Image (cartoon, rainbow, N blue to C red; front, top):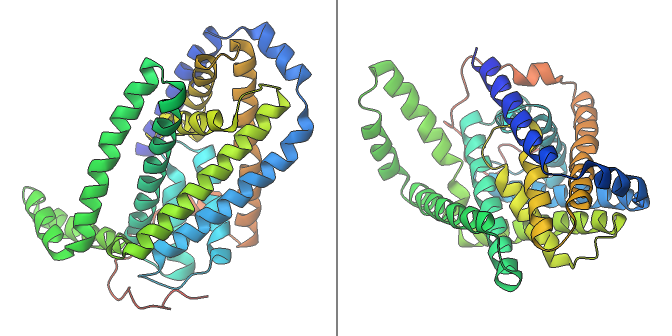
Length: 341
């Protein structure tokens, strides 16, 4: 029932944003831009995205270190599978898919894995906000992007402070959460407390300044590489804009899909990409063509690679979507090497 509701929310959200995208785009100009594009740049652009995914795997390795010693090579297919699921399904389902695979293949707590993924998303947000504000300081921001930057900055700073508190004072955080849950029935309180404790274990990397630095550096490199991909696709359409503009495009488009709504961010991604490029002077139809082509390039090869990795590890997408009856808790987790290959 819940999944059907999420599916319909995703469909309605996609239809709404795509409707806005096409309603305010010169379709004839968009078609001409697509016809005139130099598609030879697409292959290296795709390769750059997969290199950026390796840095995301390295980042996840640092986040998982308090719970197990995993190599980036081990985590890379799981990262790509997660992005594949996010591209196909609404509500950020790929995060649950990654947690399920870690539980099934490495006996790692689902809730603790989700804790590490929450930290990933936090650092993604912080880096993207920095890109948006940093580039915007030189080229300006539209009113909409200014509101987006302010709202996201406040949100991610508050979450960062909260996660730091929870990671550094786990017992106090657990007591605080227990007080929040005291209005629930006893069984729900117990279950909620167990899940919260396991989730907090997933934040343990934030106890270490050097791990925080490593996560920040790998986040910056990953998003710089993805921005490079966006720039390479822009060369296909002869947009003539400098590289920093595509750091701003990457920030705006990906911050717009932060909330788990449409499958693969289809709709919001195109709309914000187009609006950002129009703000810096790119014609609407050309910006629309670029946005559509870029997003197809981000989505389709990743879906194909993710399905291939699923097949390689003898799993199906349907199987990864079946949630375990009892999510594994973090008891006994935390020894270095426990999750090693």
